[in-house]
Image (spheres, rainbow, N blue to C red):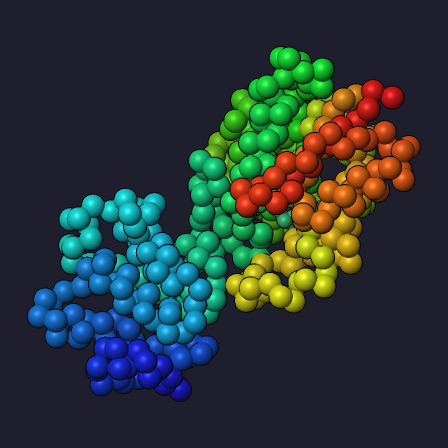
Length: 354
Ligand SMILES: C[S@@+](CC[C@H](N)C(=O)[O-])C[C@H]1O[C@@H](n2cnc3c(N)ncnc32)[C@H](O)[C@@H]1O
């Protein structure tokens, strides 16, 4: 077994380092038996026990030393997760200074070792919050990003809440709106919409079995399984009939793969190593799946039904042009909405009344 310990960490702790069988070898300056080292360090500080704050500080240093991004946040997430808290900030003073049990220290160590291998913290913890839902996460299923919460808000606000004074509000009249999500991943969008719109039903489809399984598991955990129909299918191979089981659709929503292929190589190591790259790669112009969705939409939507898409900031102009050269689709770009960074990110497209 190789014993790799970063010199900076060694200096930091001023401790004699030793290999402990069974720890394995980690990439890039990994630490051997941090628990033992840490315990000795704490003892030398005269306390003889290890607290949550100690662990956060220790693992932050280890992460920084090993070039792990968001070192402090990562160590805080891991320690608070093991202590059963949502955030480190929500831990009270007592929890922060109570000695950790041997089991808690072991758990923190195991999870931190995964993070040291650049595993995203969402996969390390096995769960993550999206809006007000806690969802199971598993590699390689796409981890929902915070901006996508705004896509959910947009659907709820534009289609189902602010419609009384709008001429474009046909779906609000539907007593039990039917929503189709294309590319459901972990189920983040579909399940949030079901929670926000208690009368709605959702058809969620994904081409990856791992994604379909995770959406199903999350739906059961949230007891939403009665109102969701989950389909394992590639959107480019599916028939309209397959998706019309509850009749014409009010809203299609999708956060499709939209990254330009040439940009894929520059993604973070966390993404490249662990997430399904097909969930991100939108082809040469980032529009491969977007075009398929738009071509299918008219045969699925009710008159005045809507498509909401999350896209790359370069896409609004490209989609507008594409719709102009495909007038037969009878789709109109109604609105472009910005994300919280001010970038054009969400498209509202509507089926014309012909
Ligand atoms: C960017 S992820 C979005 C996942 C989830 N909706 C979210 O926002 O967290 C795109 C998803 O679309 C799925 N997908 C990609 N191409 C697809 C296709 N041709 N048909 C159906 N699903 C597809 C991927 O498997 C992935 O789960």
